[in-house]
Length: 194
Image (cartoon, rainbow, N blue to C red; front, side, top):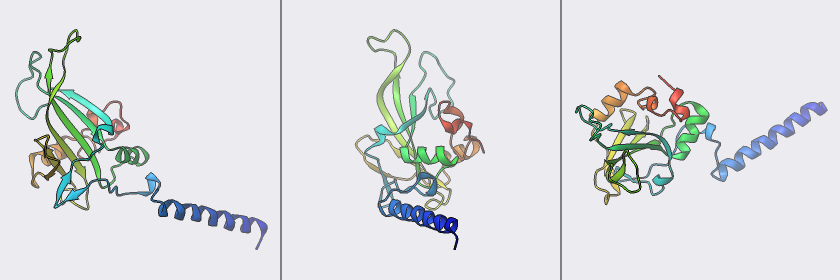
């Protein structure tokens, strides 16, 4: 065996040992995972994540309510903020696709223009509801499910039934894998399209 092949073999053992150490410590490189076990379920209900306030903002909208009303600038409807769980965001950024277990959160607030010291425009007011979109091809027959938290006091809910308008709309109009990346201009997901 030549000196070069001995060095290569030694280097390969070191790299393999580093990989074993990373896996055994629970630290797995983001690119190596295809499944994120970040969602917590109890009796088939999704537990609302305690760290959701720390999730990454993907986009926001004014008046993007679930209705067919004509937009009225004087009464624009609610303010919606979309966030993604940080590990899912890192995976998307590294791989250009969603890992199973990816969670996106839509939080809707009443919009109001009566605030001080605001000069003009609208700000968010009372919470209306929260909705989590879980992308998981292994867990859900449709590859995704939606969980609506209509009551802020409730910390876990069951998925909206399969075949829902949520899934139909996301599949028909989402630019990338059933998500509305077309509305996330500051996110690396904005450039992704099916």
